[in-house]
Image (cartoon, rainbow, N blue to C red; front, top):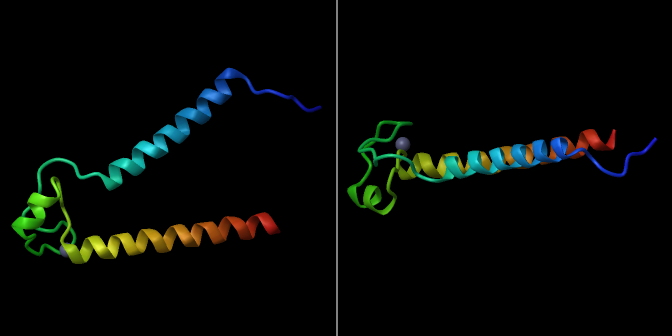
Length: 88
Ligand SMILES: [Zn+2]
């Protein structure tokens, strides 16, 4: 028996869930707090110009690049993974 509509509560749950995802993503991307003088990943000195350009920066250029590369790679992996499970 198909139900043509969902309860308000269920819709709100979905909205909350996607909102939380968006907030989480934004938090990951947006800088927070004060700029650090040293990279949290490798401890290298972060150039003053970079700290001023990116308020709240906590990674050096190398680690930031590596992190972004990793995120891109892992999201690509997840996409392939879910596609594969759908096809089974
Ligand atoms: Zn670093």
